Image 1 (tube, helix red, strand yellow):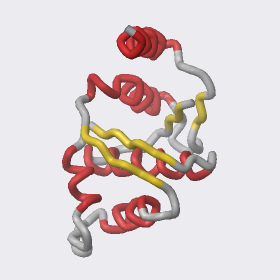
Image 2 (cartoon, rainbow, N blue to C red; image 1 turned 90 degrees about the vertical axis):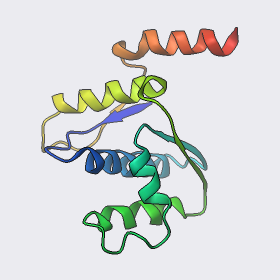
Image 3 (cartoon, helix red, strand yellow; image 1 turned 135 degrees about the vertical axis):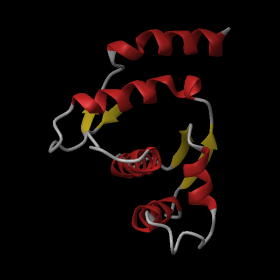
Length: 128
C-alpha cells in the first residue's frame, strides 16, 4: 500500500518531515507494530534523533509530533538511504503534486503503474 498527499509549497526538510509524519500516522492507523522507515534526507533523520535539540527549531511542532509517534508502543527503526533505494516513495511524492491541495491523504491499495517495474526489479534482486 502507498499514499500521497499534496503538501503545497514547503522547504525540502518540511516536505520530508511531513512525509515521515504521514507515514507514521498511516502505520498507526493500520495497526502496524514493526516499522522500518527509510528516508533519503539525512537532515530529517538527524533532526529527529537529536534528543531535545529541537526546542528552538522553526519546525519544532512537527518534529515534536514525529518524536511522539516514534516513541509510542511499537518498534520503529529509522534508516537513511539513497533516493534510488526508495524509488517508489519518490514516485508517490511526485504524484502528490497531482492531488488537489485541499484533499486528504490518498491511499493507493495496489502497486501504482509507475512503480511496477521498480517492484519487479527489487523482487528479482531479493530472490536471486
